[in-house]
View 1 (spheres, helix red, strand yellow):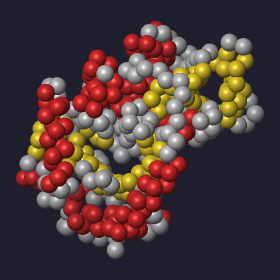
View 2: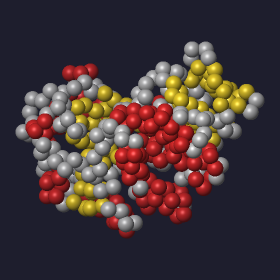
View 3: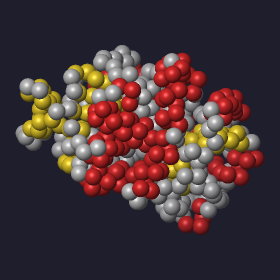
View 4: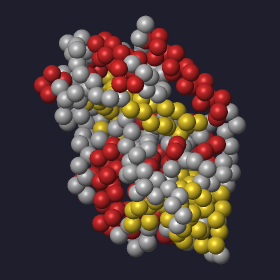
Length: 394
């Protein structure tokens, strides 16, 4: 099996294939975790963006419930892998808080709470006072705490999966770009940028939002959405009142932002869009004002250089398992839930490749799809995010 992409999906796939006795070779054009995996927000959330009822409507009652069961337990599987392989990922399974940015945000959160609670999920609806106690700020109007979730250092997790995969027998080639694919009898021939080729029985493309033209049209399935992050210097005891129980947080605003504190006392803020203005520009000003609004006691902190990555958004916010040609597959469209989605889809795909039983897959295989508005939407969103960020720094 040839796997293109050394992120959560490709590495999970390589690990589970290798443990099943299948030869797996990962080809990564840059370094492990270079794309959306290493640039991830670090929130290990269950499910997907869609409320459970919407998932059932789109997939049908039976398949929808199977999908929800799989992704509802996905955080536990991620944390189990971290424990099993002793991955140094700063894992904290304390839950995450979906915080209401305004009173209207609680309406959506109450609906999500009722549905997940009816399914037996360990979720709690938090009052404004309860959120203030768990976050250290009075800026929110309530929230939904999901105790299944948690936070990790995403790059640490990616590198840990790579080590576990290699220990299980997988081969990993970094700095090795696959430029195109062609059929060679019963095999697929992978053409590498440096002029070499490789043969494989099957090829799995695990490049998600970083998909290029290795397979024509693959990148047209998703709308790329950028998400930036910026971290303070290690603050030590100064940050102890920020999310004191170790929760991760994101809010209900249309242009959402995220917040977590790592084990070194760094506060990591993020929001939608690209980095604006380099190290000392609009992004840094936004971060300073946001931190001051949330935690007035933290003034004049030093910020590390910001970064951004890409999220692959699909029209219905569901991931995809594409099968555009015989023995060729692509896993993509994670809609901002890459840690859990990439990990469990990698495992599910490995099971399917070994068993050839489609019931091992949480989604039906699809052959062709195109989001005809992707270019317009990508341009619109990036312009809107930039305008919003500029507005917030005036």
